[in-house]
Length: 417
Image (cartoon, rainbow, N blue to C red):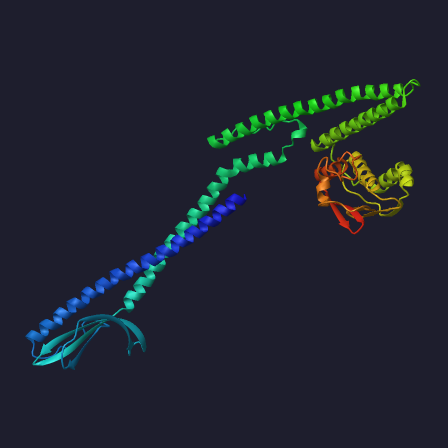
């Protein structure tokens, strides 16, 4: 619809420009034709006056036509012929009126006279105004009619396009439905609909294959990882292992556990990006989730000797409850993991906002970069680098905003909805 409005504006501008230029050119053309006609009448009057001076023994003093005048002025010598327009006072109308004058010189009885023939242009002006106004009105009416007709036709012609555009806006790939568009009478739009339908078919098939591959790969990877971890735990029971072997086995166990967590995090991240979690219908109260997560992390909090302070109101965004738990868990875990010994964490929950602030060491670079996958502070090499990326993705798919700010020793993560 914005395209049609923009086209309509351009049409109005072009039409007004053409109307103004056409009216100006028409006015100039009509004026030129009338001036030529008046000039012919003046020349004809000049011929009559010259003939009378040569054949009559008196200066002609009669009025040539109604509103015209003839004037003789004695001059010592002749000048050049001149045609001009001048405003003269009309005693009958008691006002100044436009006249076109022809000035020429004739010799009569040994004396040169300057002859001035003045022809009234009042009728010309009235005629020009009437003609120009009439033609301008007709042209303006024609242009307005064409604009309205063009606008109506454009809306009808482009209606299938906007219908297809609206269907594309409402199309959701995760619903596994092909966008089936109806046939249109316009060949171009019908071809567009067919191309869009084929495109959505390929997208739906590719998405389904990718989804199945991701789930199968995650499942198949998790199974051997579980076997590896189980075997490692069994080997720890072997008393014949030497200390170097136990150290190596411990490193293998840590790497296997890390790989298992990484696999689960990437699988969850993929599911969230593919919108496999249904959108919530009601706001999720975050207070129970926050309290439960703080209780689960109590041992880690006590170990780091971190002081917790909460300021919470019963509120929360509209989202899937499971995603809300993952979001809160990642924010709190990040605040604990990147805190300092004897540090602090402040959880502030109010209408439309969740703020998790923690003390910590300075960050190298822009803190917003930590939302990228596998981006982490070099001092925290044990981190997977997916916690904040996962939190950012959850916020994006639920139309929330997540920001990271650093003020002195405080690291502030804010979720707005």
